[in-house]
Image (cartoon, rainbow, N blue to C red; front, side, top):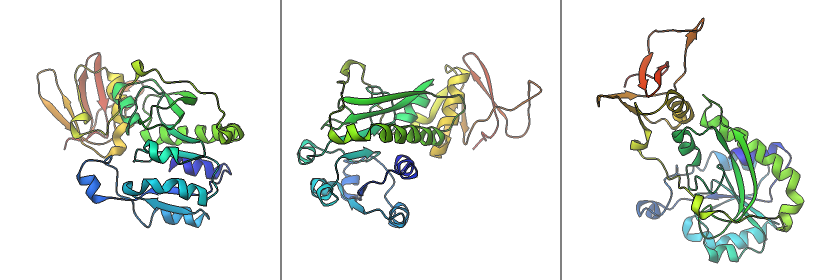
Length: 278
């Protein structure tokens, strides 16, 4: 949604918008990424109010996408955060160029939650990749890639917004070539590929072997997931945490007060305000 909003704000109006429908049986069978079921009265209404044609498609009806693209007279298809993998049968039915936008520097962090795992690893650099869509998820040849610093203390939502704006700029600049499908591309290095799966509760754990910077980056970057954290101390004790971590100082000295918790990391102590004991 961040990218679509940025494109619209930039004056680039798509011929149509395809949004995920919901298939409860497929979800229970474990065939879908665990995304939030779509609401009929949120994004759809907002997009229609802006004059866009919006259709929903359930995973069992993905083969209808080529016909929808023809109905809209689309000259290319762009996927961003679409939770279903398009198989060769669907992709081959689209005569238009098909691209996916992914919020990592592929081939690293393929999968549904790339930013989460970049924060988890304490990465200092992020970016986005535009690649051709193939049957394998996030593995198609790269046509464009933009790198940007991942600042200390930034939230995931802020990073997504910035990347969406930068991606909209790229599409505006290279739209004529993207439409033709003749953009030069580079095959991804499979030996460098890593996977970024949907995080589980255990993935929100951190411990005393982490550096202060890594722990701070992770807490700030992932707090908008609304998930509780657990910090494991050197002696095995566990501190349950919740909420954003913000480092407070006064005149260069640590400021203690209600809600401040000391996390003893590998290279020092992280003073976190806004991280409350559950």
